[in-house]
Amino acid sequence: GAIIGRQGTTIRQITQQTRARVDVHRKDNVGSLEKAITIYGNPDNCTNACKKILEVMQQEATNTNKGEITLKILAHNNLIGRIIGKGGNTIKRIMQDTDTKITVSS
Image (cartoon, rainbow, N blue to C red; front, side):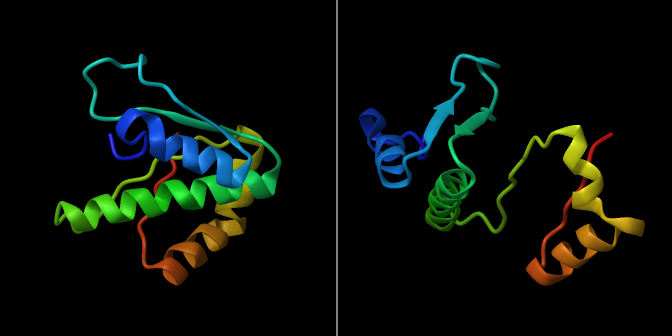
């Protein structure tokens, strides 16, 4: 796919540029249209790798005339409350500021 790139060139570039380790779980859910990606490293490097992956996703959506992309993020249970915020205020603000729809599964 676009994130891995031809012969792994895109994922290698992201890893080299950000100094984060990026694993695409290709063998999981064989035949599925979705694959998990795990990013390891210090917070800044992980953030930069995530941004680079999003740039690839955005470019791919533009190239294929898809109006929207879906990004699924796994977050530790300890962080969910902070992401949602008191009365849902934090997640509502994020959605409003970014013009996106965010759902948190239970």
